[in-house]
Each structure stands twice: as C-alpha cells, then as structure tokens.
Length: 127
Image (cartoon, rainbow, N blue to C red; front, side, top):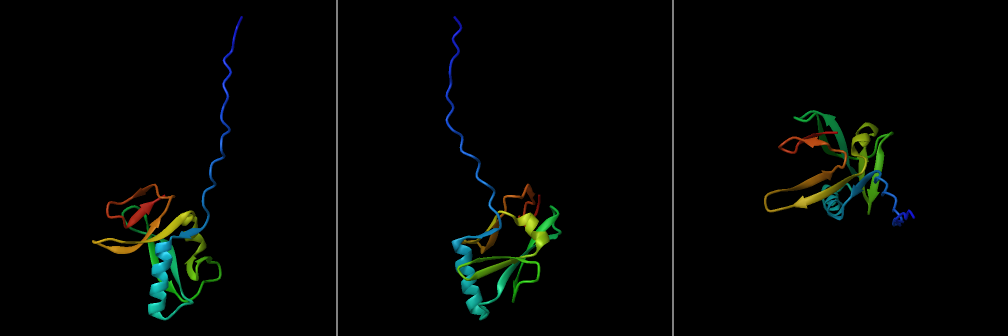
C-alpha cells in the first residue's frame, strides 16, 4: 500500500506592502521644529529633491521652502512639513528622514530603500 506523507503548511502571511510616501522619524521632527523656530518661519518646510550628479549618478538636495509648489507631494507630521517634487518622489518612495547626532557629526539622513549602490563618500547613489 502506498502511503503519502501529508504535510500541513502553516498559513502564510502576505508580504507587507511597501511604505508609501516619505516618513519622518521622531528625531527629524524634533530637529526640524527647532530649526523652524530659530528661523522664525513656522509655516515653512524642508524641500527634498533628487538631482543628477555625484559619483553614482544621483544626489540628494535639501533646502528651506516657504511654501509648497503646485505639484509637490507634501508630507506632514506634528506640524512639520516636507515638500517633494513629483520627479524626485519616484526615487524617494518609502524613504525615511532621520536626524542623527554623533560625536563626529550631525545631520539629516535619508534611509532610502530604493538605493542599489552608493559611492564611498555617501554623497551620491543609484537606483
């Protein structure tokens, strides 16, 4: 008689959907609030863009912007706003903005899951 081993498989959980938008870590929100208060421009926001350049082909750009532009994606958390143009957004989907402070340096960092390679100095990347 042929006996077949029966295996039971545990139900598989579906994969998590990729995060949309730009996430703002607690550290980034706190630092941006502080900087906006120092500038005395609480309604302004941080503009994040991706531009061509650098060793790996693309690089980030950050600057203050008094308001969003017509087609910008606007991400807000606890009163802090980040503006991203539609073209840059394609490279930044799922990215988290954090503020890091160490003994050697401090600054904003973008944890971008779309990056496939980065240059040695960390200033540019490719997707």
